[in-house]
Length: 164
Image 1 (cartoon, rainbow, N blue to C red):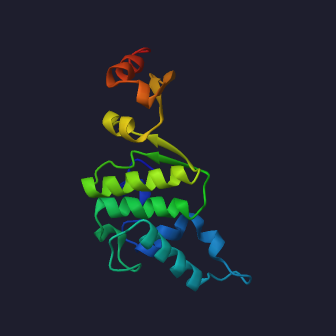
Image 2 (tube, rainbow, N blue to C red):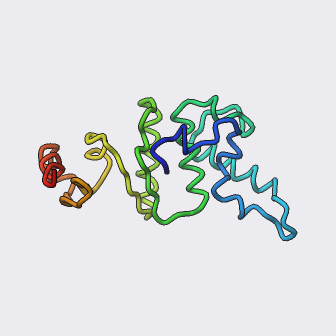
């Protein structure tokens, strides 16, 4: 999932349905090559329900949704591809506290189901609160991997400054 939701994550002038399905669109062709509209509608509804997207419906323009709801549609889009590992780049940037909490809950549920989740975030409290381990980079190099429960912000900052 991209860091810049508005410029590279959503198709702002298109609807929730299109934005939910675009990464998986090839899988919606039937035997004669036409799109299976019933399955597309069903999967869009799954994204709306599973991600708890607040929207009037799947034909709603995604640009009219809040940032948090846009982010949830993007996460749902990638979940439709049934990944074993989900990489989220700044998943809660620019969204309200309620949507952040819902996204954290979703990440916890996915981890409990055995999915691998890689989070790229510049928000240290977020990383310390939702991860098991943190890989710290410094000037493009791995500076260390720390267990979240056994580290501190100071230790992470120390590692981050190793190769400056």
